[in-house]
Amino acid sequence: MSWDKLLNNTRLGGRPPKSELGRSPFHSDHDKVIFSGAFRRLARKTQVHPLATNDHVHNRLTHSLEVACVGRTLGVRVGQELLNERLIPEQHSASDIGDIVQTACLAHDIGNPPFGHTGEEAIRHWFTNDVGAKIIEQLPFNEATDLRRFEGNAQGFRVLTTSEYHPYEGGMRLTYASLGAFIKYPWLAGDAVNGQRPIQNKYGIYCSELDLFNEVADATGLLKLSDGWRCRHPLANLMEVSDDFCYAILDLEDGVEMGILEWDKVFEILCLVLDDHQKNQLVKEIQGMKVGRRLSMVRGKVISAFVDAGATAFMNNHNEIMTGKVLGILELCDKNVRECVAAAKGLARDEIFQHPRKVELEIGAYSTISTLLNVSCSAALEYVRKGGVADSKTRRVVELLGLDLKNLDASGGVSKEYGAMMQVLDYVSGMTDNYAMHLARQFNGMGGERI
Image (cartoon, rainbow, N blue to C red; front, top):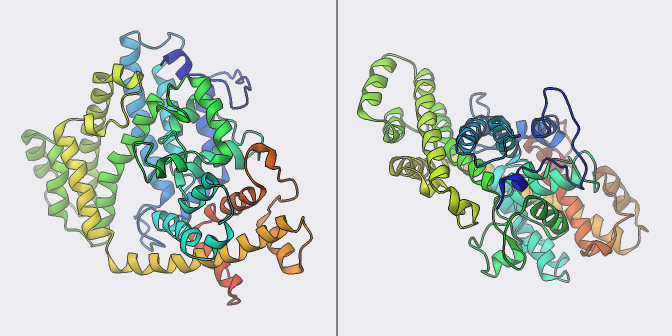
């Protein structure tokens, strides 16, 4: 691959970037994401703990902002080293790389539904085992698989390119570079399910956005690895590892904050990336401090070590990355960093993710999502199949959700029924946790004020 093409600042649809004083097209991408409604709604979406009442616990918005901070630092660091070695064109700056990675990090969870990963599982369950299984049984395999394997990453690409700002006319109209850096899994669901891709349970592109993905891939010069499959944009690796680093630290911070984890156990894991001198110095500095302040002191040093390891791993494997042979750089990082991240994820999985309150709310999420999809998908499908001639209830549901079902066109390579389901998922996956619960109660006739 060529950095000249990878850093393409043309906007989706071949739109030329604006020339703005003191603001690059990549910085503009960052601002477009920040000011979007889809990004703002992340403030009331689950990160790990549904409907948390503790204001210090992360939600999707605070998590995304923190990942973006780490990603920008890592991007600028790598960008400067690429410039020093004359690997990227001189018209680009280290800040350009930082802006691209930061934008991808800001948007990396923008397609996640309410209730976090449980929300994803609930949508998949409905289309596989519930009423939805009957609804989609006649759809082509690839379209049905998109729904049965609903994926926040693919929904995120749809938000950026299709549903937000300019619906079906380029979405946010971000640069090709930022869109390329966003895509972690550059393949379709059907290919993943059939075992034709490196990861079976992950994908990043819906059938409905396949042409847009190919446009981005061609514009940035992503290598074709086989039919329908491209390699990653190199900077997607920096976005992904920034997310991994933040998960390792911040899930444990939330666990301590909520009284689920003991401080000593967390400190022991985080110190895996610090040498003896740093650890001893920290022990002296945090002695007598409250736990919240201890976490702040440790976090900075650990993130610094993570960034050093990420930048080193990227530069040491630059040639392999540029030939499409690398799918993720965490495993290429320093051994201590790998062990720290693995231990942190293990502790979170064993002691945080199984916490009774979290599990109780997650079980309830299945009922909430099921109610929303039962009403919405049934109405959308009836409306489409009857050519817009529908009863009063169906029309009201379609109008409430703001669905544009009159102009569905199967010429885009997908069926009208699939297009209708995707519009429903745009609405449902875009909901906050609170609004999803409120609307499900309304649909069930239970009324009540909005939370």
